[in-house]
Length: 124
Image (cartoon, rainbow, N blue to C red; front, side, top):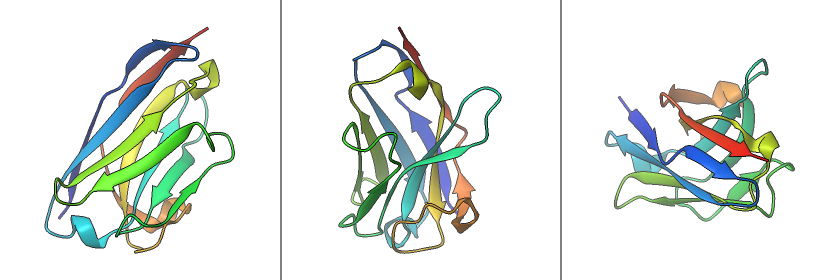
């Protein structure tokens, strides 16, 4: 069993930065790929970023590439998402998730554990 708890969301002006954290419990944390997804009001949940089990490989949605950085600290069982140069279009609830894959994956169906989400609001 894996439990995930996000934190770090909030209100920020356009151009600003936020760092999301996702604390995980469960012995399989380090053996699983991880990802961040987001869901804006009235829209489907979309992929944001993913990282391999060991942290050496990452993948990003085109909309965040160059602005967001995903990382993990397996010793602390924590996943991070550093978000820079935020835009109003980044406003959404952000979810971390644990994958059944070792490599980074964009596929929603590959993720079997989800956090409760943290709200990120970017004002213009």
